[in-house]
Length: 107
Image (spheres, rainbow, N blue to C red):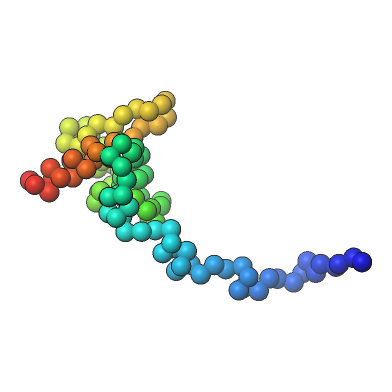
């Protein structure tokens, strides 16, 4: 017995769409809560530290400024320098970022 498939019919909306509110709620948590759960030995890359117009739904973005400001602060010595993990990977230790944030809160 062979089954025929109608290629011209479109699937119904219910079968193709996900409830975006539930998906978004499940994949993005409050920024600070996610950052607080990371161990001090974890590494964060630039896109995880700052918010970007290219990825506004980033789950981890504890710093309230842009990537260019981050690099200006690194160059000025007012933010911890990153570590080069490989030729194309630069990251910051979570413990250093937390220490910087604590110092900023005390200032």
